[in-house]
Amino acid sequence: MGAEIHPTALVAEGAELGEGAVVGPFCVVGPGARLGARTRLKSHVVIEGRTTLGEDNEVGAFAVLGGAPQHTAYKGEDTELVIGDRNVIREHATMNLGTAAGGGMTRVGSDGFYMIESHVGHDCVVGDKVILTKQATLGGHCQLGDFVIVGGLAAIHQHTRIGRHAMVGGLAAVVKDVIPYGSVWGNHAHLEGLNLVGLKRRGFGREAINTLRAAYRLLFADEGTFQERLEDTAQTYGGSPEVMEILDFIRADGSRPLCLPQRDV
Image 1 (cartoon, rainbow, N blue to C red):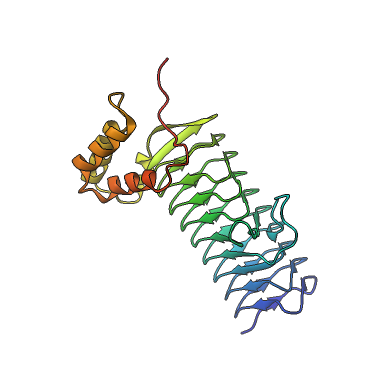
Image 2: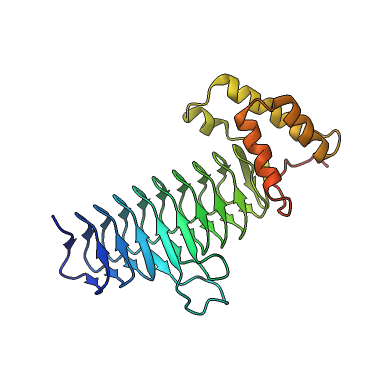
């Protein structure tokens, strides 16, 4: 079977629609759009620019995908937005094209849940099984690992990195990088501990979690310098892939500030 296009929808010449794709009432699909098999646009959805959606995505009413980057340097360059498979993108959500200066592509993974009015800015790289809850916002160039959850009305500053399995609490203002498995909240956000609820839900065993907790206490202790604690943690818990993921994340970009626990004053 071919694609199903509602009579009120506008699909430009040049758009590519996969087998079983559905374009609902009053949707607008531009000439650079590519919809994978069985991807469904419910109603009033706008697909602009060079935007690719994979298979089995569901896009809610009034979502706008592939809009121009909200960046003053953008002059209409040919950039793109690439979205994976099986995502749920709810009403009024927005995802922007990349910029030439930022590599030319915004990339969103698969199996994600992007709730009402959430936003993915230009040049972001978002992993698989990510959840952006109501009105969560990613500034340009953000990097989110797999399984990240961003709470409602939280704002992630441009260029911020958030490691896998991390949790950002609602209303948080995140201006520093968040370690894998971490849990942050506040304005500005600070590290509140590990995302223990998420780890348990995703099947991490007791031994792995206990090792992470011990490594966390050592890494963010008061004694010594941070570099000394980083080395001590690697030496003590180097056999744990989860701990090494945190340490590798920290070492990967020394120019970025890191969300740290809040200290008593």
